[in-house]
Image 1: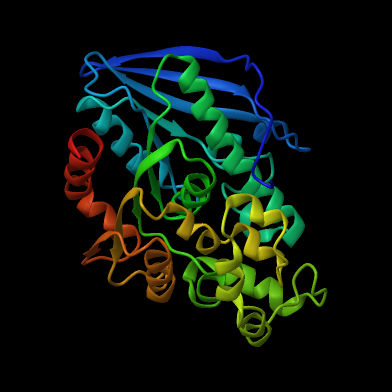
Image 2 (image 1 turned 90 degrees about the horizontal axis):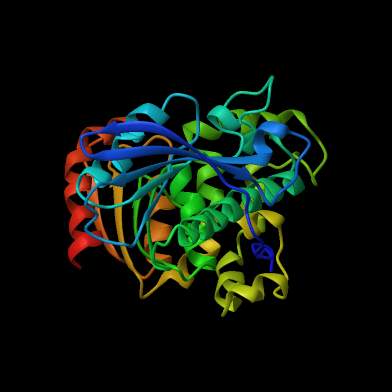
Length: 314
């Protein structure tokens, strides 16, 4: 299956970054299972926040959004979850921050590559999430995980949760699915749309909104043929983007406990995209924030409070 991998022993390096407010911060690094031409991306890097007195042995995997400015504000979440007793691992996504290849901007590779490379990039991110759980298991934590994904991190998290049943509970904030909406209506993908306009190779770029609508006209028929995860390798698809669209994986999550937060004025994740993913997940608990995409961070304490109840009590 596209997102499968063969487990092996991992040579993990750890660096103690000190303690603050009864939480130990440890930098973890190991070689990614995915080998690329970019040395920076070939190492998985994460920051593990370990409370002195944990209230659960089920760790939280935290996935940040795309870009180069959100790591500091979003790292508040794993730190705060740890302060309240939840061991939390902030994984740096490939091609982001310190995993960004020289000459590139953080996160931009996911927007600029051709379709086949993009599939590899999404696979890279999802397998890094899964192997990070292996690392935490080896540290003695439970095989049941919590996850929080914000924006692009929520998209990666949806796929990871869909293909790995160890993730039992999740919070998804300001995220969505269906690239028909995200590609053509999102402020974040305007660079990608420009590429579509100037390139003519349909296998790479060369797409138009009209072509995209045509490609997606039977998308839900495809999704409903995916009865089990391994069907990804068997069910024919119209376009490769179906293989890394979070919407294709939403129904695999039904029955697990999910809480969604969406922003009423989100200019990055269109409402149709957030609604589509919510519906495909089985309409889990959802809250609307009176905010835009970036200003949703103003509700961090509200999200934290709900997350603590979800991960510790329910």
